[in-house]
Length: 350
Ligand SMILES: [Zn+2]
Image (cartoon, rainbow, N blue to C red):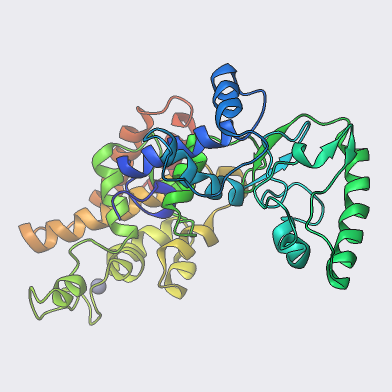
């Protein structure tokens, strides 16, 4: 959880093992492209002559083995635009309109003389010279026909293009960062990430928001779940005390949302993300989530003050606290300050 990227709901602390692996994957991707630098050219000329092995061999060096293990990963995550084709795998890379040829033409693939050959090795004097075991079966003949049709089209297009390898996800050349995200990926974007990791928000408030959106604060319902007590009810009303209750439905919350004219929306939903998203209006969309975050924060402080210090926060004090926090956050961002301070008008007492 902690090492997951922020965009997926983690705290974004780097996992060094995965980061190292991502660096190796990016090196491997460079090695499998041309024009990426003399050292890569030197290594490729040394190790990848006419063939791109899919697995390390027992004689590979300690330096080369980890790279060999990542070739498959790089091939599966990228597509190629070969120029001379010396670093593109004929059968395993995605470089034709048919996709990966070992997948698209599985029967013909079994006839290949070298299943790990490069694109370049299948050309002779500029013409295609696919090296296959003969005689071909009827089905293999059909697939060869399909392949030749595709390759002739392909040749015509390839004239203009550079020899490159592009990441499937980003459609750009690979980076270590792409691979790091890929290795960490749980396939989910965590929506609140774009609201809570903003530079205008002080660090301790970021952590509060992360816990709040992750439902990790010690609200009474969470404490009852952890068996730290058996009272999970709100101290002010007959309801379960969840963070959603405190921040959307409880008495103090209704003061705040009425002021912002969104009490109706707050009453209807029990989901913080939905609440923020459904109330964002176009023109103030940069600071609106910050304003709501400040309200969540001060509603939580008011609740803690009541429970731990036995001090209730009245309407005037709550609005005063919200305005003070708006001032504090505004000092941290010159760009957002004017818009943040403007929200203070909303909390003037009537
Ligand atoms: Zn309540």
